[in-house]
Length: 482
Image (cartoon, rainbow, N blue to C red; front, side, top):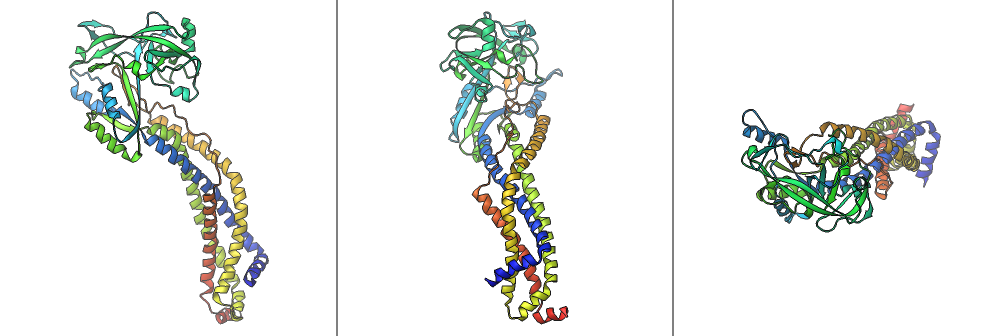
């Protein structure tokens, strides 16, 4: 009891020095509160999204390998890059794996129609191959499509960019939903049937040997949806085919119903979900063993992951780095202040030792002083740290989002699926949006970590003081005083 009473008395007697020491400890605790709150909150977010995105696996062509293959097969100085087609039955076969817990298939193709008009039809169509094609041995002009048929692509509904105005979603084969703009332009109502044509290609040994066959779709409109997406992708071509109001949404089975071995012209993609992200490499080896062309990569959606989690990881790293720097410099200052304080109090310590007080009791008294100061700083630091943590997080996150978007924009390139000889990119064209807000909370684990840091600071300062007083005997201290 005497030790604690004397510790309080000494703190009040040496107010100036202790206020300076407390200010340093206070700053360190506030920095630790903010950093640990950010670190622990972002860690949970990162683990969640890391598991989510790293478990989703897609198959996309590797552009570098495609170019190398095209150069090998080029003749007459002409090089044409075409990705090999993965047959729909092979996509299904890939989905039969013990490594997976789910597989989602999507398909798309170009369409034309004689009985409805496309929005922005005056701009022409698109989505066709380039150059002259051979159909039935006759040279003809490439087909341009005015509409696109999208199978099992309903992500925009989940993101709130599209919403069903009337009717229902397509559940059975040959059912579809269309945009309200397209329905209004053509006077289409729920229950109407619309007809489309498309072309599938039989690829020969050379491009000139490729032949085309028409395929037909008779689709019943079961729903009409409002569309709040951008009509055109930024920087992309603008024509009827690329206008998103001309997308006809249906199920996967409807799009691939006419697919046969050897046919191409329908872009098929699949997303596989592995049970454990650590098994992705094993799953990739299984796909190559099942006949997947080595020109394809088995990959995760790194672009979406980087857009969402990249700023959060940057925020976490900044907070921890700042805390470490503050603790290092703060520890050095605390050590200096403790050394100076002990030098000034050598006579006091000598008197106590001469009166018969044991070394460990003197050390305990000095440590008690630091501990009391630290506890006061801890109580204030927790409160103020909780107040400033959210504004600091918002400011740092905004800066990290801006930096991450710049990196993603600079690294976005061409790679991905194949549609009639053109390369599209389902991964880098990700619609994922960064986390713009993170709600920082002070959890029980964080409180224990901060208390541990506070005790560590108190112990460090105490050890510095104790190391000084153990070097001298009481008589020597008193003789130096006199």
